[in-house]
Length: 116
Image 1: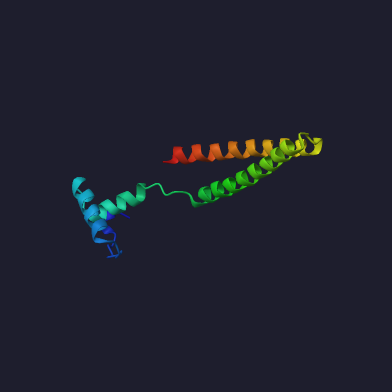
Image 2 (image 1 turned 45 degrees about the vertical axis):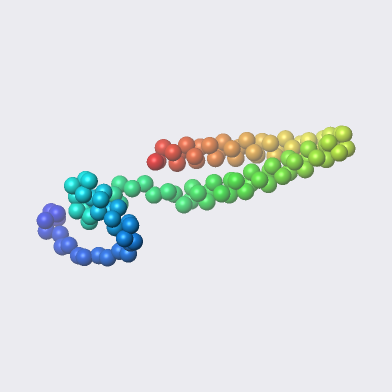
C-alpha cells in the first residue's frame, strides 16, 4: 500500500522538557518534523542486546569464582611450601576454564563492538 494511503493515528509518549527540546533541536537540524526524526531514529537505532549483557555478567561471576579457587590453591602451596599433584591438576583445569571464558568474553565483546 502506498504511503499516502496510510492512515495516520496520533500516539503519545511522555518525555521531559529537556528531552523534548533535544528532539526538537535534532529534528530541526536535520530539516525534519519531530515525528519523522523520532521514527527515523528508532528504525536505525542499535539497541544493546540484554542477553549479551547477562552472558557477560555470568562470565564475570564465573571468572571471580575461578580466581578465588586459584588464590586458595596458591595460598595453600605458599603455606605448605609444597604442591599436591591433585591440587595442581585442579589449578590446571581452573586455568584452562579461565582461558576458555576469556576467549568467549573477548568474542562477545568484539561482536558487540561490531554491532555498534
